[in-house]
Amino acid sequence: MYPMYKHRKTHNLLSSEDIMNINTLYGPRDKRPFPSSRFSWSYPSSPWYSGSYFPVSFKDTCNPDLTFDAVTTVGEAVFFFRDKYLWIKHNNQNDIKEGPISNFMPKIDCQIDAAYWVPQRSTAYLFNGTIFWTVKGSQVKGRPKNISSLGFPSWVQQIDAAVHIHKTVHTLFFTQHQYWRYNEHNKTMNDSSPRNISEDFPEINGPISAATYKDGYLHFFVGSDVYKYDVKLKEIIGADKTTSWLGC
Image (tube, rainbow, N blue to C red):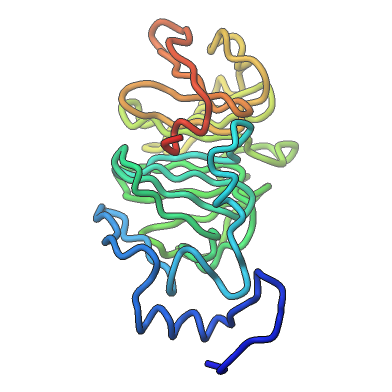
C-alpha cells in the first residue's frame, strides 16, 4: 500500500489489490459464515466490493419505491435481482449478502429479467432478453441458450417473470399480459399456452416484474408492491411492499 493517498473519487479510493490485502490482514467486513445450503454460492473476495464498484444500494435497500427485476427461491434462500445487482436473504433472517451479480456468478454481467429454481435438479435458470443461463451451485453450465428451445415463438423477446411450482412440476412464464405453462418433466410447453393473466389470476393487474412460489403461495411483485396469491381461491390474500422481503 502507498503511505498516503491524494484526493481521488470516493468510489475508487482504494485499488482492488489494496482491498484484497486489507481483507487478508483483517478479514472482510462481514465475518459471519455464509449460510450453508444445497447451493454454495461463492464470490472472489468480498461481496461488498468488486474493483472500483461501490454498491449504492446501501442507502437504497429500504427505499419504499424499490422494485425488483427478478425474484426466486434457491433452497432456503431468496435471491433478488435488480439491474446488475443481487441480494441474497437466507432462511427468513436479516442476514443478507449483496453485491454485483458478477461477484457471485462471474460469467454473468448483465441485468436478469426473470429467474426460477427447480429443486429436483438443484438448478437455477436466469433470463435476459431472448437468452438464458443454466446455473448449478455458482457455476454457469455451458453456453447461454435461446428461449426458443423452451418452445417460445420468435415474437417473444423477453420474459417478464418466471416461477416454478414444484408440486405440479410446472413453470409459469409471464410475458406482458399473457402467461405460459411449461412442463419441466416432459420439457414441453402446454398446448393451451399462452393464456391471459387476468383470466386465470383475477385481481392481478399491471405488468408482473417478478414472481416466486413460497410456503404454498404465489407471490407476485408488481412495481414496488408484492401480492400473496392463493391459487385455489384465485384471489389476493395479502399485500405488502417489496422492501419487506429485505427486512425493512
